[in-house]
Amino acid sequence: MLASALTMTNPRPVRYNPDSMDAQDIQQLCDLGQDQLSRMQYLQAEQTLANAENLAWKAGDWDALSRLYMPLQESRRQRRQRCGEGIIRLDFLSNSSSDQPDGAKSIRSANHGSALIAGWGSIAPAIDARRAQKELELYADVFLAAVYPIGAGRVVAIIPREEVQLPPVEAMSIDQLIRRLPAHSIVLNDADWAATRTFAEIMALWERLHAPFLAAADATIDPIRKIAAYRQTIRVDYACELAHQRISDTARALCAGVTS
Image (cartoon, one colour):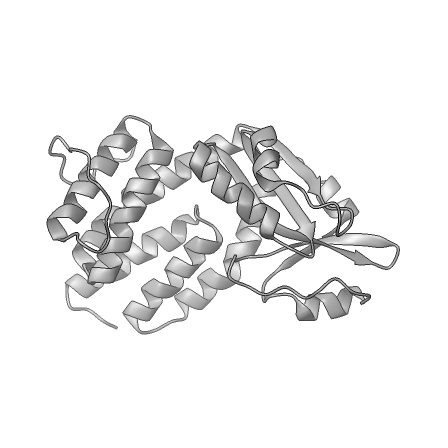
């Protein structure tokens, strides 16, 4: 278990209200999250520490950010590992505009593991599945994905982020689709996703998704924009360990007054 980077002080429950919390509340959330982590309550620890991270980011509390990102990384690493112990389901795929998978029902069916849930030109079912995963506290990872017909076949586009606009489903070539999809999307054909059956292969997909965002963050000079770019990387892949480590390092440098 990762050694505590935060002060342990018999944490009490803290109601998360970002509009009325201060530095002391951030520390209480950090203490609570560390306690949950030590109890192996990884999903709860992640949520608590993510709330503290959001508050610290808004407040520009670089000291808190420098300390909380390592326990947050550990909770997410453990979450991903637990997901890796489950089953791999890449078959929640739409066949037509009238055959959209039910995201919440699909993730309840998958329950534990990794799932690819793809709507017909839409990632809405996958977004619904992620929302249900959080509400039900399941150790289940969900790729954001959409199905597109190409000729007589179909492809699945894995999308890095939720806040995007996808092209409509219409007759087009694979090259046209790739140009119109959000940057850094991954396009798989039937053979590609049918062959993806191991956790190592699932991890490789997550790494392909976050790699360009991590590279862009590494290339950013301004430290605050750099942290923002790493936070974007984590929104693409919550378990990207390098992004967590580099936010912690950058925030620590800001505390020390080192900005280059």
